[in-house]
Length: 223
Image (cartoon, rainbow, N blue to C red):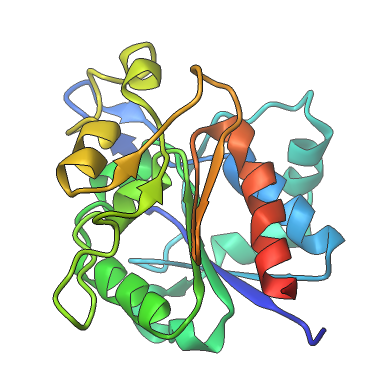
């Protein structure tokens, strides 16, 4: 197979909510997928709405994959990722939106993100997101005027997980918002890995799901 390329769309949010909770992307939700993609020879590139260096959250130095990513050239490229407006998603084979609380404050409502995801879907790409990342799928309208997620199977950070984690900090509950837009939402027990594949739409529930989601993306790119 010729080399495949995945575009990560990363949050630029550094703090969130009334208590100004420090946030960004959730570290393992980039580190684990990058480990999988690199193992399978899939190239990773990064962009964000502002094209500025993102903050991270949840780094665990006892996790070898996270430690390797912290010291990698890939994380250096992340700090210099391009602006989404300078990127054409059709130059890639898949788009991937990692979570963390940050996306809930920018990717959830950013118009360029919605347009890029619609263009990716209409162009036949794999569209994927994990944990809070599926908030980027909200409000994505396809060429025929329909919602990308209406009637499609998805997962994401569940209400039960949010209630024990950041309910006071997020502007809305992701599970509720996905359901309200007509998605067929399902989830596993809190913090257990779950990946939902509905054709080219692929979502993971939480940090434990990020690596398994990347494995599903690799399978789809090889098919």
